[in-house]
Image 1 (cartoon, helix red, strand yellow):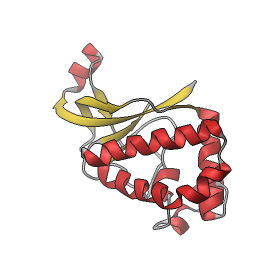
Image 2: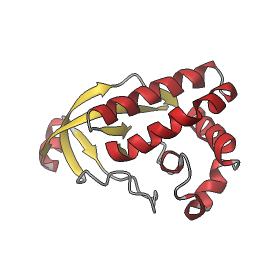
Image 3: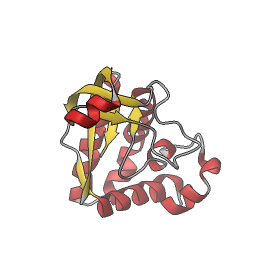
Length: 159
């Protein structure tokens, strides 16, 4: 099992009934337990039609955990579990919006994606040397998702 991450451009909002009956659309919501960070401040939770802007960003859950832990160690000098348990101490620090994101659900809007993209671009030279080839490819694909999201004022969608 793995995680798929998409860049989406949201279209019209649709009813939950239409979403449930047709299977068409995307249910956009703030993943639970990610407080105090609001990952979708510009988007109303609900079901939407959407255009997929980028979809070539898949990773095994275990590798995603490794990826986040490497970033946390390299940039914040703590393992990611420590950051999660002390999240209020890391507000305003690089990557906190990325690290405090569910590994299997939810969404990030373009305003938050822009901050995360800035962090990835700023710290690429210190993170990439710590990654194996697989994780380097994921890094590049994730940055593409972020760029497409920001350029199109879309969302990053975790599934």
